[in-house]
Image (cartoon, rainbow, N blue to C red):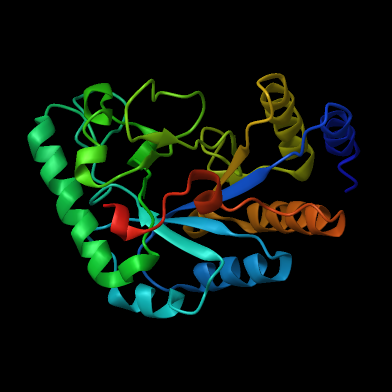
Length: 253
C-alpha cells in the first residue's frame, strides 16, 4: 500500500507552507490486556504518541502500573462508567440524557479524582465523552470540574468557553455500522485525504485518528500497522495530544 493519494495531499500542505499533523486517540481502556500490549508495541515501533481514554470507574490499578514507564501513552478521562443514560429510542449517551447536570458533574469529578489517584500527574486534563456525545449545557461546566480540553469526533462544539479548548478526532479505524470491522487501508486513505484537505482549507489544524484497541479485528490491526509504518517511513511524526493542547499538568486543575 503506497498511500499515493495521501502523499499528494501532504504535498499540497507543503506547497501551502503548512505541516500536516496527525494525532492518535484510543478509547475504552480499563485494564492491561493482550490488545493493549499490541497497541503499546505499535506505538513504540512508530514512535507514535497516543492519548489513551480510560473509563474512570472500572479502571484498574494494574493499568496504571503497566503504563508507568510507557511515556508514549498519555492517560485521560473517558467519562465515568461508560453507561448509557439515553431515553428509549435515543442515541447512547452517558454525559447527558434525563439526569441532571449536577449528578453528571458529580460523577465526572469523582472519576477524575479516581484517575488522579491512579495516574498522578501523568493524567491529562482532556475529557473524552463516551460515544463522543455530551450535553451542550454541560460543556460550559467542564473547566470548573478540572478539564481543560474536550475531545469528541467530528466538527467543533466548543464555542468561546473560557478555559476550555477542543481537540477532536476525524477518522475512525473501525466501521461500526458496517459490522464493527476494521476499515481497509484503501478506505482509510480516502477518509484521511478528505480530512486533511478540509483541515488544510481551515488553516492547517491537526487531524485526529480514532482507535479502540479492545474492538480491533485482524483487518483493523493490519490497516493501523500499515498506516503507522508508512508515515514513519516517510519521516512524518505523529503529533502529541498534550503538546497540541498544553493540557497536562495537574497543577492547573
